Every structure is written in C-alpha cells, then in structure tokens.
Length: 283
Length: 330
Image (cartoon, rainbow over all chains, first blue to last red; front, top):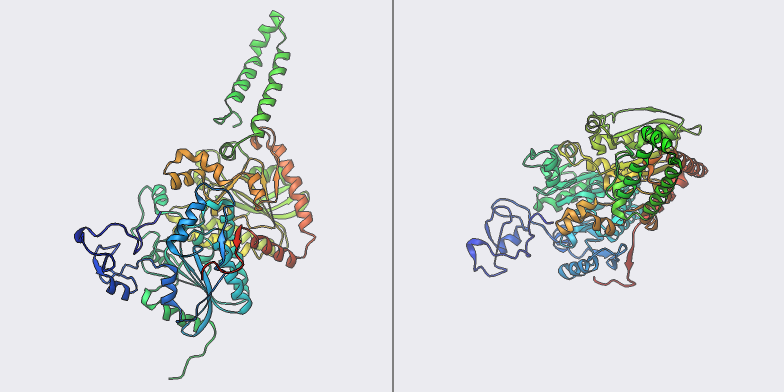
C-alpha cells in the first residue's frame, strides 16, 4: 500500500553500501543518496541532496511541531474493535500496535506552538496506513469538539490512505462524523488549519483534511482522491508527472501554501497569530 | 432490460424461456388442434417461476446483491422522479463553471408536497452513459447538489437525495477541479442544513461518492441495493491481489441493506418487488413514495434547529470502539 518504505523500516541496505551498519546511514527514498543518519535527523528527515520529505511518525511530528513539554494526550485509551468480523483485522491491529507503540492511527491532544495553545491531531501512517476507522474518526471529532467548546484552534496533520476498509460502512461514516464536527468548529468561528503530509488520500482527503480554513501541505506529498493507478487507467496513462501531489493540488486551488518541514512550526504559529486576531508588534 | 439475466438466474431464465415458447401463437394453435391444454401447463410454470424467484431472491448473498444493484434495467433516479413524484423540473449547473450530468436535480412534488430532489444518474445506452460519466460525479456534480440543497434550505423545502453510483470520478478532470474538496464540503454543509433531508440508496452506494449525497436525517435503502466503503473488486484487489475474490470481499464488507441497518447507518430497508426493482418499477416506486411521504411527514414536525442537532448526534454516534478506563499507553 505504501508508495515507498518509510525511514527506519526499510529492509534492504543501499546497493552501493551493502555493509553500512544500521543507524549510521540511510538512503534517500527519492534520489538514492546515501545520507548519514545524524545529518538526516538534523535535517528533519528531509534529504539534504534532493529535498525529499520522508515520512514522520506521530511522535516525531509532534516533537518538531509543538513546544517542549506542552503536549497532553487525549483519548489514548480508545482502541479499535472488529465490528464486521473482518478477516485478519484483529491481527493487523495487533501488529500495528506492536510496530508503532500506538493504540491507533491518530494521536490527539492539547499543545502549544510558539506559545499558541491549540488542539492537535497527528496521524501516523505506520499504523495500518493511517487509515480512518471508528477510533480515528472519534478521536478527530472529539478533538474538534474540544476546540469548539474551549475556543482553541485546531491543527491536524494527516497521513492516510483513506477510510479503513476493515470497518466497512462504519469507516465511511467517520468521514461524515469528522466533517460534521468540522462544521461546528466552522460555525463557532474557531480556526482550523489542516496540514497535508505524505500521503493524504481517499476518505481522509475527502473529509476533514480538505476542510481547513487554511490548508497547508508538505512539498512532494501524495495528495489526491483515488490512487494514481486508478486514475491512470481512467486516463489511458495520460497524467501529468505531478498528478496528485501537494504541488498539483496547489496549482488547482486546493492548498494555500506548500510549506517545507523546517518552516512548518513557525508558519503555523504565524497563521495562528493572525487567525486569533493578534495585533502586530510595533517595531 | 428485464430479459437480461444475472449469473445466478440460470433456472429463472430457463423457465422464462420455456413459458415464452409455450406462449408462441403457432405453438398454441398446434396444441389446440392436438387437444392439449397449454394454459394449464403455462400456469404451472408461472407458479414454479414465482417460487424459484422468491426462493432465490429471499436468499441473495452479498455478491448476488451487488450484481442486482448494478443491473442495467434497474430503475435510476429519473425513473423514480417520473414514477413516484407528481411533477419534476430539472435545474442545472454548479454556478462555478460546470454542469455535471452524473448528478441531476430540481424541483418536484410528491403527493402534493413541494420538495427539492437531487440524485445520481446512471444511464443505459452508451452515448448517455458517456454523457453522465456512468453515474460517477466529478466536483461539479457535488457542487450542483450542494447548490440545490441550499436552495431547499432557503425555501424551507425538504430535500430528497437519491444515491446510485459506483463512486465519484477518479480521473484527471475530477482531481483538477477538487472532487475531494467538493465531497468534504457536502459532508460538512449537509450536516448543518436547516431543512429535513432524506437520502435513499436506490442501487449502488459506492464509497465517498455515495456518502457525499447521503448525509441525512433518515437514510433509506432498497432491499437489494448495496452501500460500501469500497467496491468488492477494489477490496479484493488490495487485500488479496485478486479481483476474482470479489464475492468473498462482498461478504466481508457487509455491504447489504440488511447489514447497513444492523450497523445503524441505514434506518429503513424498503422491500423490492419479487425478482428485484427492475422487474416492476411502478410497484417499487409506490413503495418508495409511501416511505418518503411518511418520513417527510414525521420530519416536518420538528423545528429546523432540533433537526440539525439530532442529525449531528446521529452522525456523531457512528462507529464501534473500545474505551479503556485508564490510558493503555501514554
């Protein structure tokens, strides 16, 4: 399902460096450049050669987005059931929990960004492709309801293949649930900023991810409705190279700004300052 | 046409062929000359046909229902507008640059009551199918639907939405014009629409493209319609890399009307005529009309504010999860 492996879980060593010990070097998933782990980490997992933004898990994302020691997690105790009795679903959940150390594919809570208090929801693609089932939908809706009730801006980072098919119609219904919660946030006049990261597709892009007052995207992220493969069949292979990327969505008016990772935190703080009505400081 | 038989209807097809043969005028003439009573034989066969059909249709599995829901003679939105409504005038366009014919809509009356109707429209002949993109709407279609929904709200008319699509369009024009955003916006705006909304899944309820027209106070579903997060073929391809296992995926996805009702996503399942809606569209339309009128009557008693609050609670309560008393992990 994944377009490419995400850092830290790639099984094969780079061809040219068969013997590189794990943890010292890694290879850029886009250009193949061998990168020293220390430099790669320091550059926020962005390739120092081609600028490719590698995926981050939820913890990594939070660590480089919110102010230290401000994150207070909510609803960590929600776990998925198996309402359809879908083949292998429980096993997949178990594996995802073991692999990620998370209970589900989104982490939510209170935090601050450069002093701006907010509610944040961060998806983790490593947990069943970041797919949205009942728990993800419920946690996102609760986060938005907290934002509405406490008049705290909401920021979401999405990374998801879409609705979780193992939960069938109940997964589909989460699209409506999160969008309905977004409606209340909207009508209450509370800011909502949606940040699209690699990948944001299907039922997540077609629900709460598309509904931000402001929509930001990381460079080069896959952002689209159905998979490129499906669209390619429909179009007989005539698709632009940047089809279903952040840049494509920006060109077509679906994204306000493409924001490089190292500028994300400050951009969010800046926008939150504006949306919360801060007046500018005299220089 | 009703003559198109599905793969599980072999015995039904055989019986119908036999009856048609016996009803041939030449054959009857010949039989009469020989003193054989064909009418009795035909009567027996018809009885048998009904029994076989009833047995088969009472026990359709999820994959068989998928085939019925896609039957090309199955009534579409415009068929129901003609058969179940007093009148209908079509309105067009999203006022943003497009008119997507995969979605139709306009003003209509049902048993005298003025309403706004929107619906996804498939087609039967090739040219019309292309014009309507096989019922797969792009952003313009969802935006047209929203425009008409807002009109319903403005003039305090109930909104009726017919859902019948394999899914939203996934091609380049759809993506260029923001089909995801259009669906998302519909989900958000329909959730706060201050007028009664009734959605009916009449055929295929395919994923986000269906949901983008199905946020409502009441969701009805025809007995053999399907409603699913992903097509059985798509699910089988992803899970098992084998589209041929679509029938297994259909079972696992619980995409039948009966399952949708058990999951709480659908409120009422409307019984279909024997052999499916396409065997008797006027009868299906009568059932549909009665259900719509009943639902609209009930919903029109409520204040718009109460409706919106109850709709929110309805959307909000969807899903099944476990909630441990204390955090399992921190």
